[in-house]
Amino acid sequence: MAMTAQTRQPQMGLTFEKVWAAMMETDKKIKEVTESQKKTDEQIKELSANVGGVNNSLGDMAEGLMASDLVETFEALGLDFDRSFQNYKVKEKKTKRKLTEVDMLLVNGTIAMAVESKTTMTQGDVDKHETRMEILRHEPNSLFANRKLYGAMAGVKMSHQAREYAIDKGFFVIELTGDTIKIDMPEGFEPKTW
Image (cartoon, rainbow, N blue to C red; front, side, top):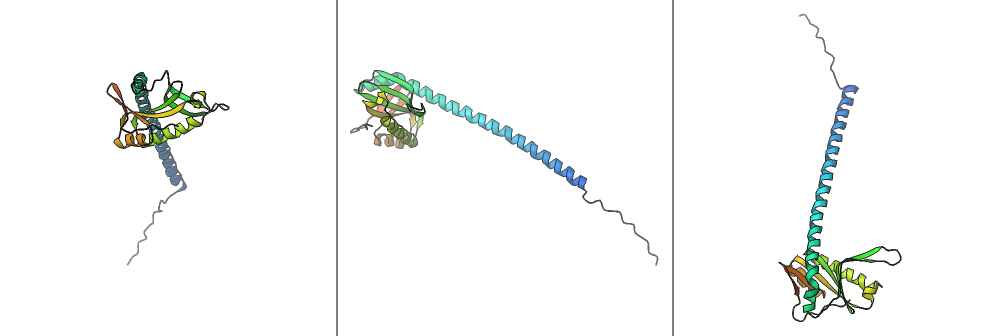
């Protein structure tokens, strides 16, 4: 029996060059994914800004529509206001740091009415306005110092729960319905004075 010698071919295993090339390819793919993610993040940020801008525009529109008729509507209830301000900012006297902002402020010689306007009013909005009212009451601003301070929540859309919550907290509730303003004052309603 004759034995034939089999020649072995050297096996081509992983070489440094192959490993390095694979790592460079992986690095390139990671950079492409990262760049793509950055573009997606920028698009999401831009979309969020646009959606927020639309929401702000709707809120501004609701404020504008309400402000024009609000003084007259309160007059019908016996509350006469001779001045009104939109987006009234309250600042700390020394530092000029903004403490809060009121969407609409109605004033006469003895009363100030701070109105918070929302496209869609929620219970959380009512809580925030209650906090705002406390800031206004304790701010030694000449508009609030010698006046009774009342609050109102205005909305284009509000749930029954949010409406009732605002009334329970002592706020006037103003609803924009079509082209009219309705102030919800159930029997026995006593507005809170801050």
